[in-house]
Length: 422
Image: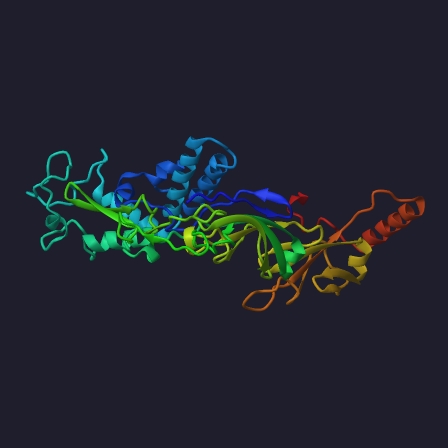
């Protein structure tokens, strides 16, 4: 499944990404033989963040909307999406790495490293004469996991969506979609309900997702008997793969819906109200289950991810759940003491500054910061900073010189504790 739609926020089109699992008909043989790391151009030691960055870069370059009519880019985009679907899930990636480590050798053939001495493996790593009981049976010592061969591939391809035998359980889930949302700083801190306009695939309103013309019904696929899978043997090893005739759905549509051509999917613009929780951070992704692209012929929809970009504020800064604000003050206010009014999320608040306060001191107001989703709010941290006038009239200059003389008479030295004094 290739996400073909676009999503728009505030009239700006963005390219959706595909991060769901179990949407690609990756066979067991492909799982072993393909190098998903090479598809994304990352090493096998790449972190999850590196994999995500590589995928997003390639997805934007290869997306069919950016390369209309380029079949090669479309196939490459599908390969990149399949690789990301496997490597982005920690459990699936772990099983993929383990499987390749156990069953692949450097030349791409099945490895004989797991057999004990004397096993009848054909030279060169072929399958002929290979006795799996040597690897997984009572005498097998190379396989350190407690699960057997069937357990490994059972877990592996349950996640890939190719192990089940009923058509209903094999229906391909729709693709995930990601949209971008720009929020002002204060809305991100306090939370907001955001209407998003999403353009792209939706459930067909004519056939309601069935893919058939109203009044007709699909029939069971004769090739796979309605299971959606075909089994074949290769070198003594069995593989299950998606049926090409029914595309893994287990049914054939003889009278397709005229509006969606039998896919059960239409295209329109829809508005979704997304509740942004208080305290959302820049770069955070909010998941809306089942609001992505619909699956073919009534299959479950994918998820919608809202990637939040927070626009910086001219007054407030943020440090975790604390809000920060810097207040300009005069030297006389710090020396004599004063009370200043500073902005807060719910209006303004007064801060008392004691006499003799040094420039740069921070005052903490408890509970006036970012609302927390599961606990008390953060604090508001107010820092006072002296501002120096750039232009003075004669009266102000005379007053400052008189003050400077009076200050020296007290014996006060501004640089008394400065390490660079001497």
